Image 1 (cartoon, helix red, strand yellow):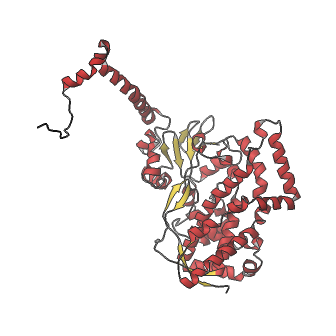
Image 2 (image 1 turned 45 degrees about the horizontal axis):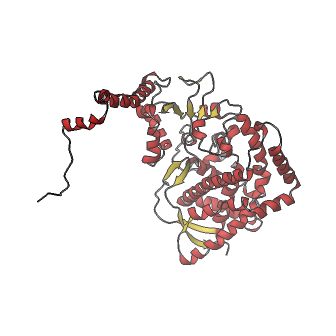
Image 3 (image 1 turned 180 degrees about the horizontal axis):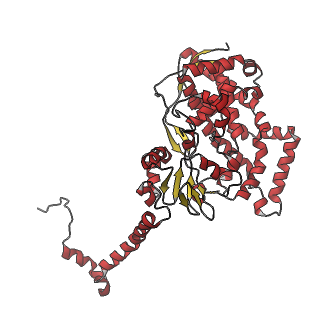
Length: 455
């Protein structure tokens, strides 16, 4: 009986050779050479590149992981395979190599020295953004050329000016009233409120994308109408491309606000966590809010809310300890190269100094792991304000900084003034997060609404 069982298929050396009999005779004798040549064509460049990066590259003497010097896959591993974020490793790497400058990629370094922040990000700096890094971005953030950036930003700036931002406070107040009405039901049911979800709904996206709102605003504001008309005329002009506004500005505004809503909702969630984790801080902040209740509860006067000193200190400390954009913002060493400390960096080197490395620098912020709003008050406040870099600094500072502060101040002032809250769940003393260019919380911030203090 014939055996139909599947068996393993193997070839003897002689049988393997017969496979190549269909080839022309010259190729039969050299098939191994062909394979070897093809293999070498792939392998040799990789080996050559690796040897160059490790032993002959201008950054060869900069300390850091050898795998990072060899390949960008090292960063990919920590960002996506380990799912933590490469930037979270920088502090440990600086300590391990005992160096203020470490090599984090084949042509990239990171420094944790605050004095270099001014060198790189100062007004008039010749350090441009890294094209290879920012090619994944759109709009204003993706612009490498400083002249093009200035032109485009100048057209958008009126929409983010302090006056324009202040005018948005009534819209935000309306959203806060709506959210509070939904949250009131949780007081009777004793059901926890997921503040992360609540805060994500407090986004300006729907308002900026509301056609009626934009038309009404244009109808009421002659100066804004004229400004819009000039921008749209500029699009159709025969001026050089450098002087034109990039098309579809409303789409860019929507993108800015959508991106900003992620960072502000993250910061707000962290703020509620740290405030409610400390009874002393919570009580001190509520006391300040109660003393100024009339323009929070009745008139909702943002001009006065923005001047509350302890509220501002809490916000600054939250931005410090929970940096919204914690990772690399690489800049390219300009022509002629530069020397940072004792390390020479040739032109074209990508240099990063993460905002987190500034915010957790012990020489600037003693006990950096602790949430201490008081550090932003008194005699130290002016010195520390220089290192409040959550929105970057210099000509590339986030255009939406005023908008972010509006939301942070108003949301915290309103909710903490109105509701008595308590944390639920078990997040420990710190929130877990990952770096996705912007920080993303891994823990929900759930609170119990004890009572409505206004009713």
